Amino acid sequence: MYSVKEALTKATQQIKGISDIPNKEARILLASYLKKDQLWLITHDGEEIVEEGYFKLIERRFNNEPIEYITNSASFYGRDFYVDSNVLIPRPETEILVDEVISTCKGIKRPTIVEIGTGSGIISIVLALLIPDAIITAIDISKEALKVAQKNAEKYEVDDRIEFIHSDLCENYKKKNFDMLVSNPPYIANDESLHIGLSYEPSMALYGGKEGDEILKNIINIFIEKNVKNLACEMGYDQKDAITNYLKDFNLKANFYKDLARLDRGFVINK
Ligand SMILES: C[S@@+](CC[C@H](N)C(=O)[O-])C[C@H]1O[C@@H](n2cnc3c(N)ncnc32)[C@H](O)[C@@H]1O
Image (cartoon, rainbow, N blue to C red; front, top):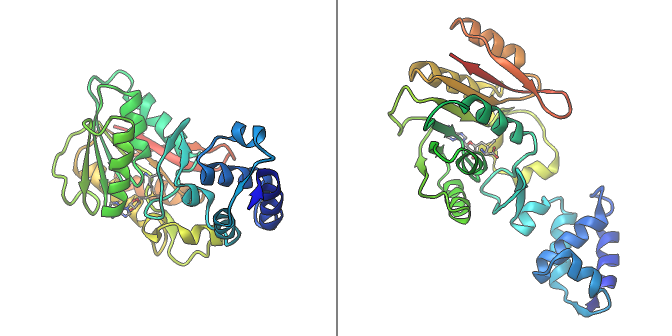
């Protein structure tokens, strides 16, 4: 048995080689382990209540497992979502994609929105919360991911407003002429070597093909074939030229946006 203070000191030492914020992560993991909040840890730092089980979590973190998978919790757009290793951990830059969709849908009454590759459901769920009259369909090729998305939709009580469909792209979704297609698809090239932390995330959520932009191009094809009015996609920082060239063949132009690091990160096409 360790006191809160002793446990935090020991845990911080153990993960300081792999984390930039070891003390903060040790606290987050302890709060999660004890099912208490951060303030409780401060006010009870002398209490001897920490068992060895806590150090099993610290060991997982030491092995580079992302903290979000250990706590089953990730933040997106100021809200907390359930995550596990079946889904990508939400990235802050994807909030910009959500903002792009919201500004495109402004002025459209009861916008019909389809998301390809919903993962944990974060994009569709935040859109359902922020565009209350939107009619949303969320697709994923992974049944396990769809279970996570459904769980999150129930948490935010929007499960009756989002239709979840198990499908490879739009194979099982036949409707056309909708207002908005949105996607944060896998866009990393198959042979790219990644940081060890990413090896815990599903490869189906990361890799987009030999070049990396194959799924993005398929989504552009769907946008054209289904006569969708608007398209918003996240992409890799180095894919702007490839997308621009691909769109030229269809006489289409995209407005590209950057992320907070000023890297090209996505695009919007309005017909
Ligand atoms: C990069 S993750 C994005 C997850 C979530 N939308 C987000 O932004 O955090 C891509 C998602 O696309 C799904 N996916 C990959 N290939 C797909 C395909 N061919 N059809 C439908 N979904 C696919 C993966 O299972 C994964 O959940």
